[in-house]
Amino acid sequence: MIIGIGLITFRLHDCHSLKGKRKVVRSITSHLRNHFNASVAEVGANDVHQRAEIGFAMVGNDQKVINSKIDKIFNLADDLKLAEIIDTEMEIINVNCKP
Image 1 (spheres, rainbow, N blue to C red):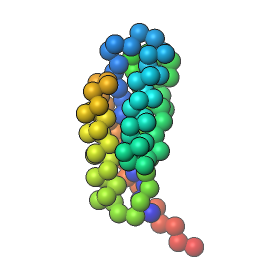
Image 2 (spheres, one colour; image 1 turned 90 degrees about the vertical axis):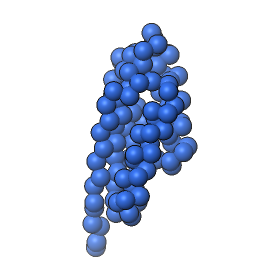
Image 3 (spheres, rainbow, N blue to C red; image 1 turned 60 degrees about the vertical axis):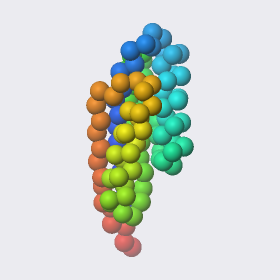
């Protein structure tokens, strides 16, 4: 079993309230969730209105496929142009689950 996890840190220049931030974060997370069938959530910087940290995870059986999907998630998040990406992190974990 291969587990891919990632973190995207955004700078939201035009957000001056947490309400505006929620709108942008909700749009980004729903796009990523719908396009890639991944678990996506805001995972940090919850009280900072000009910064958002969105994490995601996916599971599969092929490391190349998971790596490709993570790259595509980063690209889609950038292509949305809803916020500036200032940092990305990813990790791929190989887990052997044999009884």
